[in-house]
Image (cartoon, rainbow, N blue to C red; front, side, top):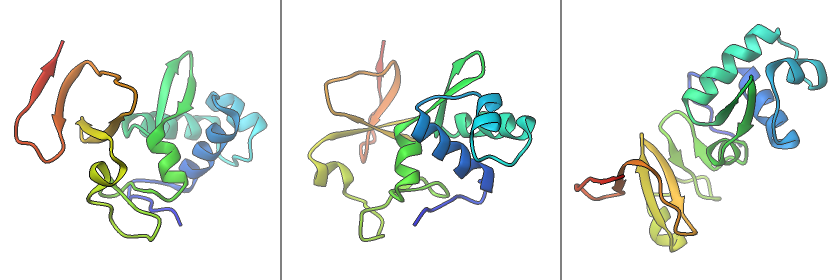
Length: 136
């Protein structure tokens, strides 16, 4: 079961499914080769909105890829209304970082996981912490 936010439309799921299956695509390619029954302009508008919400990433030249959050949404593990991760039982997973044994960081109100010692440039906050650290 997917947990779509009120801001999402039916074409959003088709776009995310296409990008999950094909790894990348442009609105023109999705319209031409995918099961998307919307205009190229509508697909383009929705890709931009999905990128603003961090479910897809714009690579340039009209090409998009799905993000980890986009994949989590497709699998029913992310509620895009309140941006909460859902465990497999369908309940909110408030202890995600502790249960998974990984460091979870919040960047621009989205959650990213530091699995391999990767670092992000920008403002980072440890979930549940009041302190803010800047990484240059």
